[in-house]
Amino acid sequence: MYLFVFLCSLIIFISFAFMPVARRAGAPFLLIALIIGMLLGEDGPGRIEFSNFNFAFDLGSVALAVILFAGGLETDRRVFRSAGAPATSLATLGVLVTAGITGVAAALLLQVPWQVGLLLGAAVASTDAAATFLLIQQSGIGLRPRLKDTLLLESGLNDPMAIFLTVTLTSLVATMQTDAPFDLASMGVLLVMQAGIGILGGIFGGRLLARLLDTLSLPVGTYPVMTLAGALVIFAGVSLLGGSGFLAAYLAGISLKAKLKRPIDRIVDFNEAFQWLCQLVLFLTLGLLVTPSALLQDIWPTIGIAAVLMLVARPLAVFASVGWMGFTLRENIFLSWVGLRGAVPILLAIYPVISPGPITVGFFNVVFVIVAISLTTQGWTIGPVARLLGLGPQPPKAKDEAEVSAP
Image 1 (cartoon, helix red, strand yellow):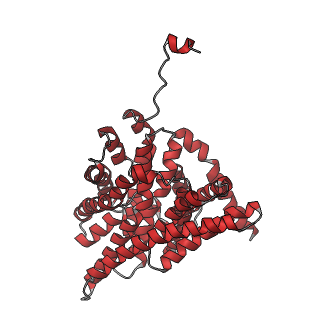
Image 2 (cartoon, helix red, strand yellow):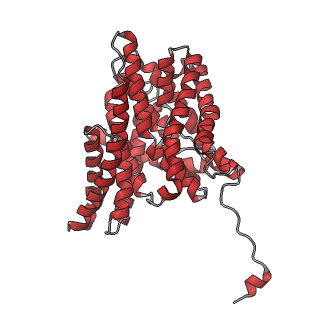
Image 3 (cartoon, helix red, strand yellow):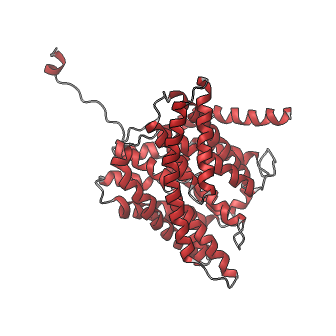
């Protein structure tokens, strides 16, 4: 037991110690965590054999719920007034366009049935909240509020559509080997339940949690822990009812922040710290799960799919979804480039692998490489691209002599 605690704590400590190095190098910290996880795996010096996809999926789901709740706590509900429409459009129409174009490219480049290609496109169609929240903060760029809010809000809202597409296409692929009919109507009901129950559960659950926290008289240090436990109750309860627990966790954070009368600073600080820990554990686990030697199979088609995703599918999705919503050309280009993929696509890639059907671990490996390419190329260049497009903080204008001398 002591050895286990020693090694786990040492790995987490060393990983956090790399944060300043990653910031100075301009590298995404999550990419560093993935690499450390891969080094600890069976092909690395750590030689840890880990292939439990079910455990990784469950652990990743809980970690992602915590990350989304913490992101919601840092989001003001007023962002829905300025960024609600574009973020919702990107989270629905944008995901559909991205999945369709990427799926066609995957079917052609990997020479797989079109159902499998579209399933891969659906898995990588949503942007990732963990990567987006972290890398926008880490880059240190001062974006226009509406542009920044759109990116953050989109990453929190697009999970239900991606989950619906992945579940639907997984069922469709499973019927390829049987004569069972594909029930499209039940899939439509699934989408409505995912979004509807997720929205209602998140909003009302967050309000109820805020009221309980304001009513109860507890030791000051217990409120953050109780808040996190309440958020996980909302996440799990909504999931049990058939809704999107991820969407509910995100909206619960926003609703709690808006309704809580008690000072929220301790709660935000605690959840931010726990969010970092969950991000680290999540990406270490996903890095540990992959076998690096198996990633070289189909590497060139995978690179081609990643290029189509970043350079064709995402830009077309952005211009089709929000190109007419008041963003400048430069802002649309930036939105097109910052379509970061992270933990969500990898988790969605695990679902077809652990479900009955013909999908193998090779599917997971392809998605993993696409996410790694996205984190490397897009995550590493957020700051430079923003400055190149003139979207970063502008130098202050020099005051004229009369203004300086005026009392």
